[in-house]
Image 1: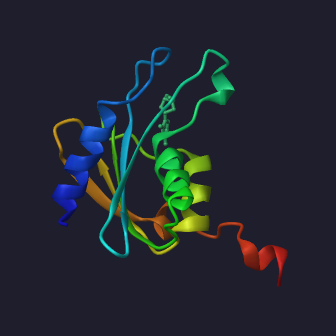
Image 2: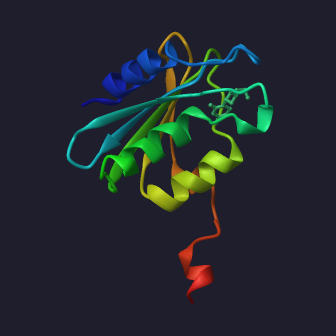
Amino acid sequence: MTAGDLVAQALKARTRAYAPYSGYQVGAALLTEDGDVILGCNVENAAYPATICAERVALTAAVAQGKRRFTALAVATRNGGSPCGTCRQVMAELGPAMVVYIADESGAYRTTTVRDLLPDSFDSDNLHP
Ligand code: THU
């Protein structure tokens, strides 16, 4: 699975977004260590705070499917928007070593890492020093 393949999967997931309020569709494709790809899209709600971001849909669905080890995450939006702070925290919890591809709707992407997106994160070491 190349970076371009994973971005293509995120673009596919984006077509499934439920975003009637913002009109901002987001797709995510999460690559597991054993090569599986789990998709996520944003799912909005009339009670706005109940909205779930695409990245957290993919990560939490993966955990529910018994997957715990991830190597990469691709995120696709219309304009290459960057993951929100809450999603960065969840990425740091579940996939601290992941590479992250941030793509726009053309499929152009930039490459970063969870560590660069959220340095000095709060983690389990803080709870159990
Ligand atoms: N959104 C995501 O899915 N991921 C992010 O990292 C940022 C924001 C969604 C939430 C909402 O449905 C829409 O984008 C506008 O904020």
